[in-house]
Image (cartoon, rainbow over all chains, first blue to last red; front, side, top):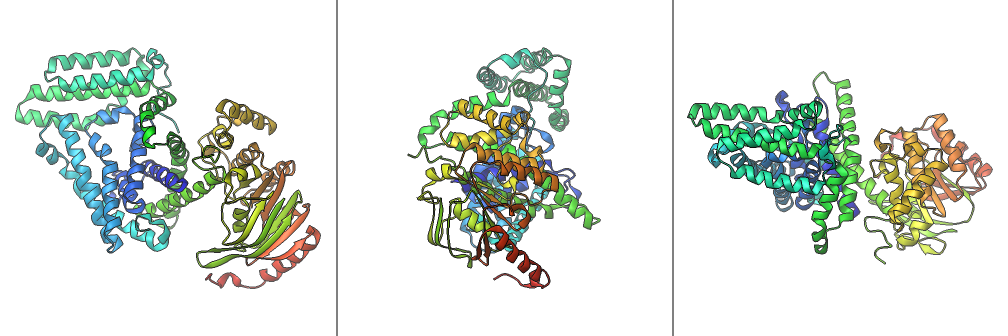
Length: 180
Length: 205
Length: 237
């Protein structure tokens, strides 16, 4: 009970921390937020249930008014902006990612990357596109067209999530709980 | 950790949080029901007036929270300029501006503790399905306590990287950071147990 | 009254503690040993955080690992790294937590928090954010949090490591004034020379047990001897 609670809370804090690290840059010098990488890791490392809970806790705190999103954003305004779906979809994204890693016992790096693509991109974009379509008054295909530009960056993040997960498993096997 | 509540005290700070949140929900539903630019322009003007009632400094801070909309406003202008559906474009832009302004207004005028109080009131019915509000309180405290420390460790790892490499620190820093978060979680779980755990033994009889 | 009977603990394949038996009622007890000698595992057993694989650990006749309710009143533990112990964002919340865990109503807990802060002359710390404190200040907050719960025995696990000399001396003074019994785990003989009893743990077993003058002399002689060797190259397991 204590362990589940602290793991969920600390991963929510990790996702927040990833948005706060100054001058943090991913591959190719793209200054994109590492927070969705944190969401994928919540799934691949903590597993479906705990990963989803960590994201849910994070979103709840953002709604309450804590500036936990990259760039110090937060508050209810986030939920009225066009990107709302890309935040609200986090728990589902982490859940699906974690679920795949838990069930599919193949090569961890590969499985984690594929799981992150399915959970962290496919599932997340379903939420994201619906959110954009509603807020911007566009049809679903139109909204989907608007976000395609971000997919390559997210695929990189999914690959990184796989590499990080397998590196974690090699350096300290006990910490990859989705395979525990 | 600082919250987004405005240090500029306005009349709205004294309105109960539940009232503000209920009004915001209704207003947002209303905004999405409107299709015509004219009433939406009126709604936006109303939300601007609301923000201005808090004074210039307060309004300035509120305006900064609208910055995330710029790329989208540009996108809408481009899209509807090309397709020629100007009225629709105007309606979408005004709706977004009004909804975001109102939401920021509520966040800026409501203290974190009041927000938490409303949240636990809303969650109270779920207690009978086994939701532990105590566990929830603890996890909120833990996130607030550990976010700065994880960010600081991330900064230190980035420093350690830079001390030994000409290239900028990258994703490699995330692995030790995740490991640290897991370590911290294990230690804190133990510290929690040392002082009685999530459900103190008294309560279990 | 602390009583350990043939305590053995296995951690991930290695034998951390072997057949430890101790009966102790002294007010100031020190446990010394090298890094990895099993000291911390012993501290966790005494605090009831680690259930022994064999044997039993009791304080006042109660099993600390099983009877957590009794354990909360019998024993408090101060971890080596205060960052591992502080759970809350502010000092007052951190100290109040243990009191609420003991079943105190919030208002009463708040008064007791004020009282303990005042006793240490730190009333102005109440609403300070815990992550902004220095290492020594954090350790003092942890000590106050444990003292607030008024346990009969306080276990200190290397509480002074990483602190500068003035900070260490100040904390030692605070610990010296503690009314409860103290069981102090350390590798530094200096900080426990004035204690009532010293137990030396080596490779998970008791190597010596007696008055500080005698045990610490043997301990220091052995440490200097080992200091001349190179056992850093040995890998565990």
